[in-house]
Image (cartoon, rainbow, N blue to C red; front, side):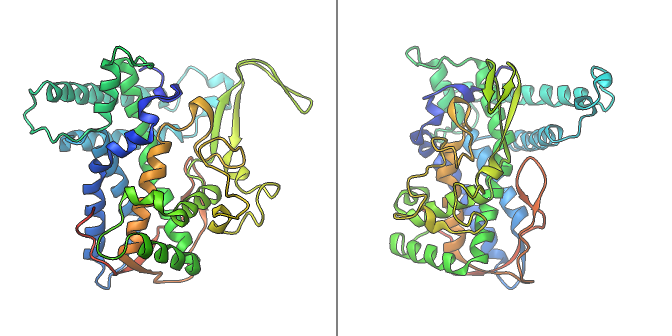
Length: 381
């Protein structure tokens, strides 16, 4: 499979308008999540960690291909899980040079198997979409533009600045499947946990929700731009609990830094987690304080999209996370709906905030909460 399309600057899928055009594909998932939570909000605890993973997976499936058949969705989830396991697996060959090339742990074989399964799945998805676009699909065309539509429009546009190949499309969808679900769920989970640990912040967010949205409808993605405190909560969570711990780059020429020479083709890892907690950049860096990103706060001008090196949860430059625009729009909307529709109680306080080591900054313990319905989650805007 070809290199990811993440390197293309000013590509259509990076634009906020593209994230907005797929928002309708995420509404059924948000509705389902809120409704299932409401069903559980009858004196029973709910494992929100599991609930949010399910929400994230379903949202990504619908966003990529809104009419994805059930068997394809199951295969995609399984493949994405296998990829995450392989990427995070301990590889003896990385540490013992004599073992290289022997595939003693079978990781190369497993990687090829997953690659072939994913490639077959993506080819089937693209062919199904091609038939749909020609009006030959069995399913009724819902006229909802999903990511495959956007990518295939770009590939078919002779005037497009970015010339996409079929392999480029597959690589981008693979990126979304493998990197999007865990990070999205983890970020929403940490946001909710931090708010429960800081009731004053939770009340400020509720007050903003009541002022901007009211109680006659449920908050939606279009409301996010009018809610600065919600955006500040997201930024503070990304600073303190970034979903990805590291970003990686490769030196394309020798670089001299503080007396050290970094040779060409050297892989360099940036510790995003530590940068967000650096006292030289942040006052009281271990404290959860969304106010630092509000007007008048020290971080008011700091943007998490890669232009400020003290906060880069999505990386920076041409190879920054291609789903950045989507995350900045969908994640706060999901969190806001949970806060607006439910009161949350920690059944066994205090809430454990310990992190688990891994590729994603996940909670070590599941987020088990007792929800009480505050606002009926239907209808959504």
